[in-house]
Length: 116
Length: 144
Image 1 (cartoon, rainbow over the protein chains, first blue to last red):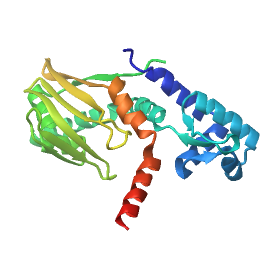
Image 2: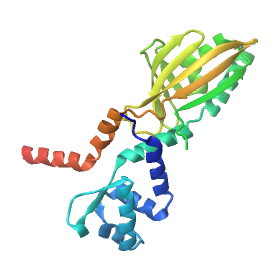
Image 3: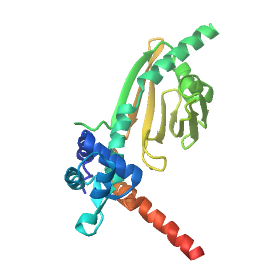
Image 4: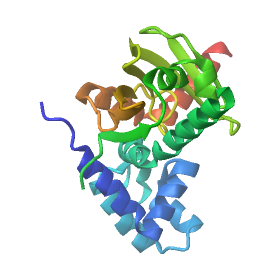
């Protein structure tokens, strides 16, 4: 079985996050839970039409899921899975070994001077 | 875009392997340069931990102990939720180099994502809080 394509998943997250409107929509779903396009339009300075368009894109990228329901009352929910894949990518970039290794050298130098 | 699975650094250190080994594998050594506080039970499977003033902590599990050449441990992937089972493996290799040591650190496993872990850890979570809160409501209803 082929592994899930984590690069493609991470890329979709970063592409989604690069747009300020989509960032605002994802942030609203993360902090407030599932919401309809109308709910979001009430909270954000974005038109309902624009929000619906962004939600359709986000759903296609599987970053949100639409709960079954009547068309105008469909609630969208954030999917945590792709976010966790992107987080993992960031973890590799955020890992700092240079700082600790410099600190290790500094420690050994001080230690050697101290015992000399 | 290449997903970085491993990070590798090599540094030349002007101190012999025994000194470097002590700095890497003792609580006193680790707390002097890495964490602010450290504990370590130096045997494969032994627990180790580090703590920083920021409140950040790292729990490690010692995996390889081959004094004074190889020291390996696993730890939680920084930035992922505490209950995420994924861990990276960190391995220090010490080679004598003149009067000093060539120290290599490799941290690997950033790109691990087993299919079944993906299913259980992620798709299992998509119901998330809605279903957990629903269960709480059911529980409270039943208890009432």
